[in-house]
Length: 117
Image (cartoon, rainbow, N blue to C red; front, side):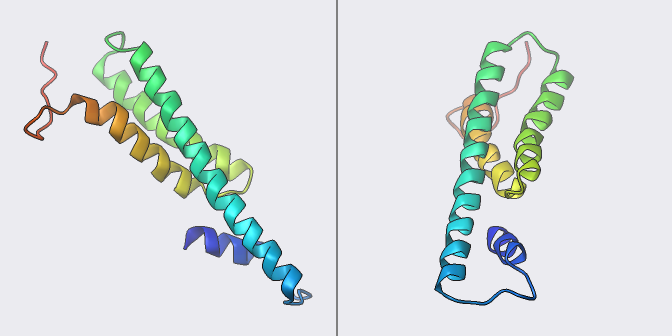
């Protein structure tokens, strides 16, 4: 819905004539924004995974939480800068970070593991 709204706003014009070319251009724009935002989100999520893998044990818990939020915001600002959907990118990043960073710390019973050292 967000990408569709952005596509409609992109083509909002008083002089726009709705014909086959406009519909094709809107469809292409929709898929470029949707797929591009997903790709940026997934790539950012895997970069965050690599970062947290490299910095494992080197940071305090406070710094780790702050960096987690920063990594979640990076794809939003990238997509916002190129007028794609930052929200779709953040959701994709969140899924990748959940599977690779947060999900890695859960034990077999499904409860979060304690990080007492």
